Length: 129
Image (tube, rainbow, N blue to C red; front, side, top):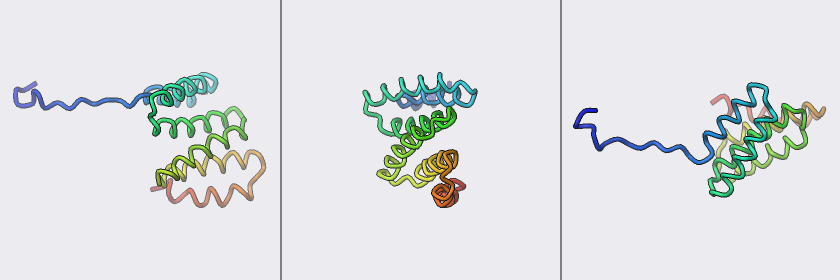
């Protein structure tokens, strides 16, 4: 490192639970849903203890995705709704749209197409941005 750069380094820190959240998503996409849910539960416990609320919001969304992959649509809807409420309180439009899409997907799997379609339609423009 050049002497001019020494002392100017920025230390990059990873938010608590971020690595665990990423590994749970990787497990989910590898088809290891049970391991993913276990990792998500441990992550949620950690971030609640530390009070890192943005990680809690993200874990609710991931819980919803993993539960829907297992066919536990009612539970998945509840997790997506929790994420939606958190995104709404922080006025995060894209997050709200992703949560609505998750709810809509689960509703379609339960036969609630008429209820799901407007939700998915409303969510799509924000997700595409």
